[in-house]
Length: 111
Image 1 (cartoon, rainbow, N blue to C red):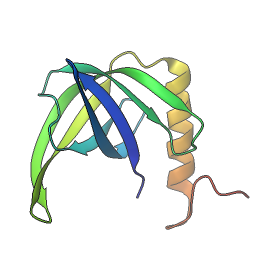
Image 2 (image 1 turned 90 degrees about the vertical axis):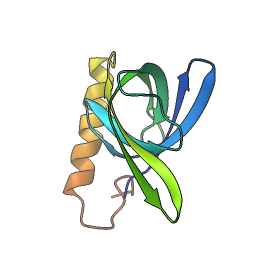
Image 3 (image 1 turned 120 degrees about the horizontal axis):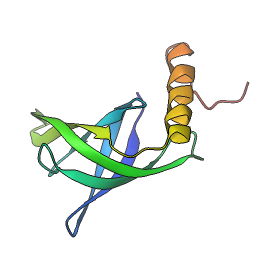
Image 4 (image 1 turned 180 degrees about the horizontal axis):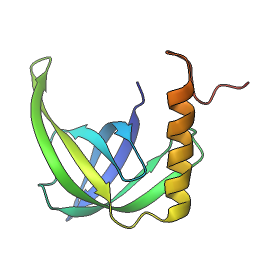
């Protein structure tokens, strides 16, 4: 499972969420207190290659509340509003490499 730590800022509050799904158009993450649907906010994260910093504005397009181990959380889907084409291509390349790997293999392992 891929996990990205993302940092966002909504008004004067900074939040950290953990994404487990990403594409060229957006990502899904979970957080205890995420922004509401329709909210736009700046976000930053490093792709799992540990080299590519992504900074852009996101818009919340959906939320789903759930509970894990007795703790409530919210799954959130966001779309990238102003992500440049070069970063979209880097995300695409990373996702394609990951989806071609055998189960359990690391996309950034040498070879």
